[in-house]
Image (cartoon, rainbow, N blue to C red):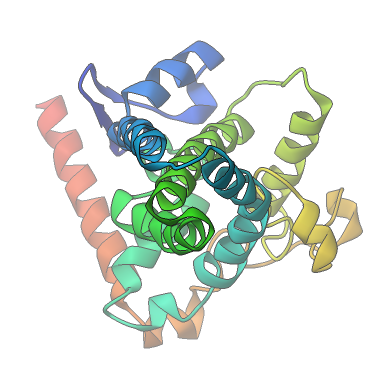
Length: 254
């Protein structure tokens, strides 16, 4: 079982065995979350110092909030669920890390969190050009800071959706139910994590599992059978991970 590392933590975390308080502690001790929040603070400071007036940076930040659900949907559906990534030896490891492992073991917190080498480039690619067009350096900084904050929010909501915890807010309960259906019933729908707005727009929304058939690829995302044999790189990496985990278990029990 992978570890979640942080300055105050060297523990193993499984969301299906955690409480809300455990999640909050794990969340804020995870290095990537700390980096997002530090970058957000730095971006906000830079935006304030470089802004000629508050209007441009504020507009850039608000636009990021509005655009985020669409970006979340498109990345999840067209990149994370794309079969192109595992068909190349150059991207197979990335796909395994950022999504295959999560669908294989949805409760493993270490692979639920995004990897910085994949998340930060996407945040920068989406936010910096738009922010710069709106208000130059100050707008770019404000947009990037907002992107980091929103993504931190996304990571926490995603954790809640896999935690054995019933949210008080109905909108969050509904998101949780639909996301779990995406993982355990049919992965070809309910791509939104923090919003199902674009699932409605692109007709990939389903409210209850009974509304669509159960998918045979819900756990392997289509990476099985002939696909697995023809493109063996993810399988080889998974086998290496299993050997490493077994060796670690033997050392621990020795």
